[in-house]
Length: 86
Image (cartoon, rainbow, N blue to C red):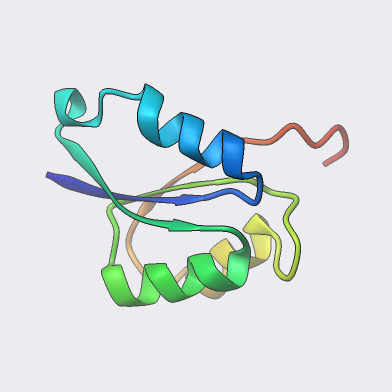
């Protein structure tokens, strides 16, 4: 099974992703959830996920900074955002 970490500051979106995707059908399991990049970074370092799904614009640390600070780890990143400006 591929280990997935979800990093999204909006609870309703994070829970929606977690509960609306048939993870097992894709040989995945959600092993952790975080509300900001700092929490996400801690999960990446401790859980060594295969896939990280993250928002860009979050409080404390944004998703791009989180990715930059964990670039030495091997995982695929999926970036989801409603942020209107990159």
